[in-house]
Amino acid sequence: MPEIEKSAGSVEEAIEAALTELGVSEQEATIEIVQEERSGFLGRGGQPAIVRVRTAARGPARGMVAEAAEDAAGDDVAGDDVAVDEQAEVAEAFVRGLLDSMGVDFEVEVNVSEGVTYVDIWGAEESDEIGILIGRRGHTVDSLQELVRSHVQHRTGERCRVQVDVEDYRKRQRSRIVRHAREVARRVTKTGRTESLEPMNAYERKLVHDAVAEFNGLETVSEGEDPERFVVVSRRR
Image (cartoon, rainbow, N blue to C red; front, side, top):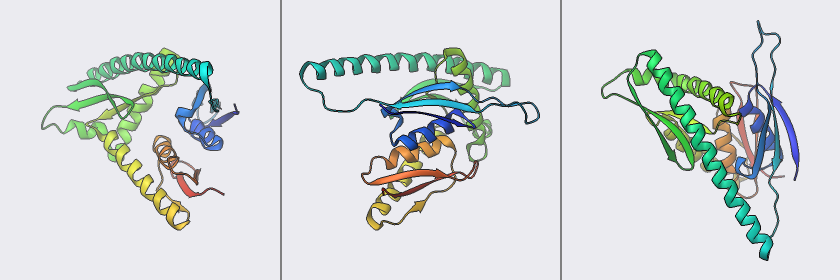
């Protein structure tokens, strides 16, 4: 059961680096946040995020061992579901309070799509305010996600697994990125030529890593510095 620690400017970036080095997806690993990132005063005294990631045990199981493993997995899944539900409640209350303080009228609800729990924000019909909440290239909703992430982790002591979405912007973005990553993976599989994707944030890069992991014989690595950091897809050496 390999285990490594990684540090980076944010929790998501540290997790991405650890998962990439271990060659596993988030679903195949146990993640522990050792230290959250913290900004310093005037650029001094800050601290990086540190995570400890270990891969789940693998191997064949037989008879009673297999049944016990399945039972344990079922208990873990149930516990995970409860944890995510609790996080969703915390996140929803935080978003409602934040929008109320802004004096804007939006609908907020919790939904699950493709295994991801979202706090969805919907604007009134014919309202221009919703575009402001998304921001240019999603920058505002990304900032809102960071606020929710920090709040949920502070309240629950667990890494936030809830996404904030505005008018399905993130869901459409997720579908586009995953579709594009799979297209690139198919080309690399066929031609053998390495391809680089456009710069993305840590969340988007993780979507690419997970999508390409579905293809045998390929590997991904992130290169460059934020905000120009990007994913490279190549045949496994």
